[in-house]
Image (cartoon, rainbow, N blue to C red; front, side, top):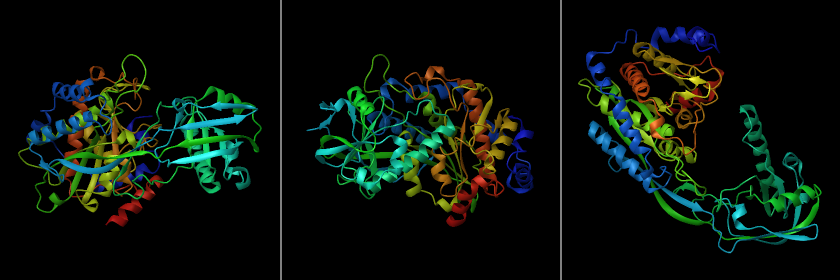
Length: 514
């Protein structure tokens, strides 16, 4: 299902391929000796050096924000400087972003529930407060049990002013369709709770992160300070006694009372950084248009509890993509003749916190969005042990046939001995799961290229630098560099595939940005 003839038979791609052959691909692109010499500088040893530093225990998992993340940013900037890239940030290579860290405050926390003649006192270690909460004092409110599926049909009389108890469905065993259905039900539940205004919503879950989590908001965004609106989701609780009491309660009517108190969240300013350098184009007109190659340099930090290895090193996800952006900058920086368009090398903060860095760039672009012709985002390039089988000399692109970028990189693969393909099950499904989506939403043909969609140790402390296949990664990187040069030297910019109905929103955004 991965051969080219099958791919071209899918979703109007045959027509699209004919259009590509007629114009948007360079007619006879060849790697010049200058280009080949530059790309040959990419080496397995160099890549292992970048990844082993970025994914070292010293950087403590590169959480957003953290000292380890700042050290990684400085390292990337030093390599851009070494490559001779032009700094493109407001502070050298850094596009600085002012955020506010908002963390739950457990000082003075109290939560008790009286049902069936007994009073349960829920310890704070069993409760995850949302960072969006405000100071809340709920004394002796009625308690009502509503199963998850019944919440959208609830009435204001049942819920208003009461503490609502429900059980959140498990997510770990859901397939793609199950996650989609859960997302739809979660939206309906959230909208219902916002409309019916319970005093507090309590969602029972198998486990919570001790102490609760925090969140980051752009400082200039509405509601960034302590007066942020309370979340209608309320709190998550993992407490065996409360779960047992819930199971014995009657559904749909007030059955007991609850008291809940918490303080306002703690806020503090945080400075974050996208790292950006540009290889300026050589054409007097096209140099003011831009091809982006991007990756996120953050990861998950340190597991707060547990024994053994607690550091999420994030070697494949995504020190491998970051190392590739760096290595491509070092290689292409040696070109005697720069490509016609400018190539922007950029690494983002906060992808693991919801694509914060790429969203920030979309709101505060360094280069005009209307002049940005494509983005190739890079994720998970080093591991070849994909869950579907070994991926050697192969790479997949999300939304492969959403634009002609996929076909361009397929051709680059032919020139460099790499098979670039559309994964029939995962290419489209993963299109919105990385930083490319926030640029695609602005109309830029933006995709993510990866070797292994799913691999052992994903989001686990075992994702360490020694497990990457660096010779294969170097080969993939030379293909990526070739594809970037093909787009940067082509006077015809990439276009969305009008024959694919999945691209309608992106095509509309592209029309609006002109």
